[in-house]
Image (cartoon, rainbow, N blue to C red; front, side, top):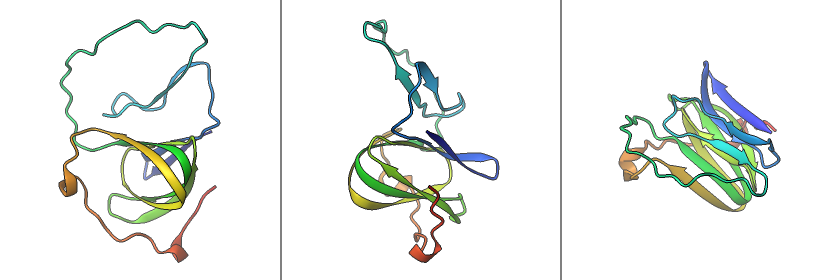
Length: 143
């Protein structure tokens, strides 16, 4: 239900599969991440008090992304910061992916609808360095 993709002691990504369920609230990310990912399951009638968020200075150096797969199937390929391919996973409708560190690429296997959430504003091409994807014959697809 939860998969952690790691390399050299660092978490590259976290996948929360669509069948994950737990009462209450579950934070998947440590406090050190600039993007927090949590899951909530609350009973009918549960109230979250109205609130506003206070201005808090945060120093963000790396973009972290969260993808919500609404429909379809997508393969995600994981790379080190040095652009070395590691492994791949297939995501399906209802899966959630947090990309924390390292590189990544995607191949749409079935027409997909995806929501992406990340820190903004998007800096265009200055926000990323593109490189050649892994060849299909080199895939290390983990189920």
